[in-house]
Structure formats: structure tokens, C-alpha cells
Length: 179
Image (cartoon, rainbow, N blue to C red; front, side):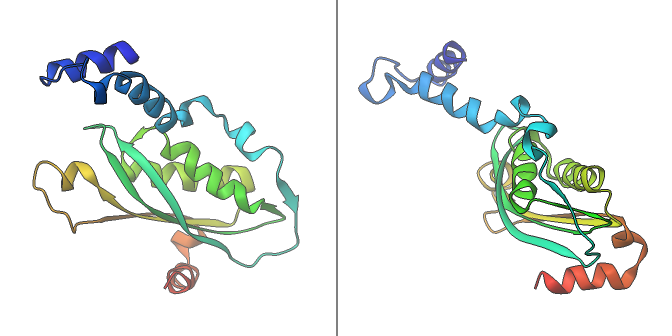
């Protein structure tokens, strides 16, 4: 990747021998590896058997999970937060694992709509929950730095599964607890 970043830097008209750019191709390659590290993770590694028996069937919510991802269309970041809720049916997922699932999918070239759905489907499949709700709100640099250049714009997406989709009171409770 280092060589490709060197070519990109040269192609915009910069001098790679300039002191500030001497190590930039390697630093950019290392950064890109980190920003896309979700491709190197598996769900089994992330969950790591942190699924615990529980007789709770009350809503579990983890909100304000910071995330960053890379827009697959322009390879520019989008930055925001995810809110995840589910209703357990005999098993609960370790708290940190919800954030790790968000990170695993976020650290891939993505669109926010798909990211939201991937997180919801994964929480559903891992826990067997009666329902799952995921809301992501993010600012997209591809819209802020280029194109229409709207710095105050943000995007919200949601994925509601099971009773979060079919039961208005469950969905309403989830949404009200996020306020």
C-alpha cells in the first residue's frame, strides 16, 4: 500500500522528498490498515463466547457508541454514534461486545445504511433476541468536504427487527429511552 500512497501523493503534484512527506506513504498505509481492520476480524473472535444465560426479557440498550467508517464511494470518513437495543430471550451479550461488533463492521468500506443493517442482523443472530433496534447518526465528510459542502448535515438510519418492527410500543420505548 505504501507504494500506492506514494503514487497518489506524487499525482497531486507534491514532492515526496519534501521533509514533511518523507514518511507519509508508510504512515498513510498504516492508517488505512487500521481504518479497514474490520476485514481481518471474525464475528467469533469479536464475541469470544461472551454470551451469558439470563432470565431477563427487559430491553437492553447501549447508546452513544462512537464510530467511524469509510464511505465506500469516496473513501472519506463518516463519523458518528450508534444506539443498539435488544430484548433478550435467555441470553445476553457481554456489554463490550456490542461496541466491538459496531467497530468490526464500521472498520470496513461502507455505506451507513448497510452498516446499520449489518449490526442489527448480527446482534439478532448472535443473541436470538425477540427484537433488535439500531440507530446510527453520522456526519459524512464526502458530503461536507466535497460535492454540496454542507458542514452541518448529518444522516440518521435505523434498522428495526422482530418486536422492534412489529410492536409499536416496543419501538416507542426504545426511541424514548434514547432521548
